[in-house]
Amino acid sequence: MANGRGSLECCYCTFYRCHNPAWHDYDAAYEAGKCLRHQADLPASTSTGLHRVCRDFRPTKLFTQESVVSVEERFAWFPFDLAPGVLYGFDYNAPPEVHAIASLGPSAPSTEPTQDA
Image (cartoon, rainbow, N blue to C red; front, top):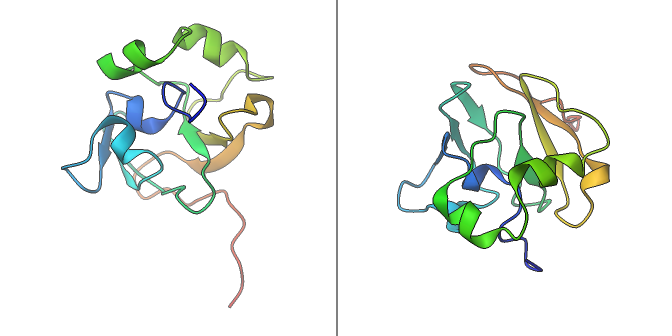
């Protein structure tokens, strides 16, 4: 969909829990949360609008209702296979620009460059 709904994003994954338990599915898009699969804290991408995904994405019912294509077709849009234990970010209309944004694991550090104060 043109607004990013139905795209690969942590909020559409059955393992994702938003920091605000009242938010679900696309209402929780880009928000910080927890990955139950990796037991990892997930960074927010609200400032960049990047969609977040890892190779272990498992779609919610709403994803299957809102996505025009399958999960497998969406993963095929990436130019490489996603590595295990890595959280990736991409603009929903530019999947070939997918890049690592964090390591997944308990208290894993981000792979994003930090800015010195």
